[in-house]
Image (cartoon, rainbow, N blue to C red; front, side, top):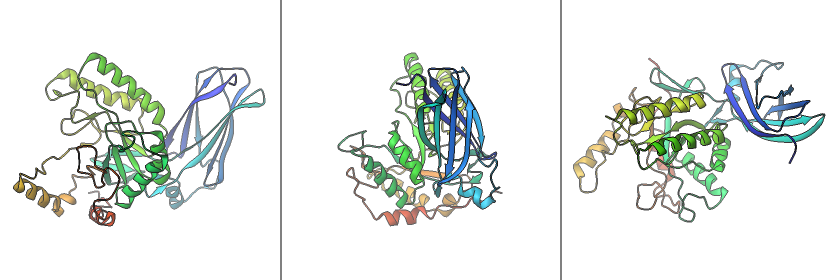
Length: 360
């Protein structure tokens, strides 16, 4: 174990100014300590610099990616931005140098990506963007919440993309880092979530906040994650419509996540009861059961209504769900990941939803 090492590295991206802010934490400190950074894009070196590290535990440095380089056209700038259609990634190597000797090396990557909302519209990289999501609980018959192999993550993302989805909402679990790695590489949006508490208690509130600190510390650098979902269907906050304490917890979690991560959206209580949220995510259970044919027929007609599909009030959807899970058999795939219908047909259906959003 070296006397000094890099413990945590955090990349905060700003596509409007073409900068990445590097934050690093170190274990151990000694005099004459420097951090060297090499950044490249698709094999082309962009930046190389060396920074003195003082005795502060956290190091901050903003790096301009176009400084001392040829100015890029708008087309070239778009090529360097991360999106599902163009999962562009920058490579970065960090070396911690003490008295002229490299004592630690970190190799990683980052994606220049911006997500925000304005006037009821969601923007990805400053362009209106329509979410075509699918709920993914991340269950497997063999491992339950653990994938049988790393390749199973790749297969899941690949078939979701083949069916015309541009992202997923991970449901009631903090997903494995390897899934997020492949989502970064393959170009797939992720709404990150956590398992809900069972009850509304003081202990639960404290534990929940602590665990979200840990999630953001681990997953902050993944460009694929564009939203955090702290609550689902009012689980653990069943009286949020009338209980001020439960309302305050949702508001507290919203602002806590925003204070820790200002680069992503927060979907505060995906379901139907919201306090403060960047996206109004409404879950529709009006499809009815097999014993309610009239209700099912109405739901089917409404989902084929072009006025609904093209409504200016709707900027995305999330279909439930990717695969069957235990007693839930509403997946597009079986529990064994066998398609129940032709993936190309699902893709054709998804293509009916808007690609371009007209701003009026």
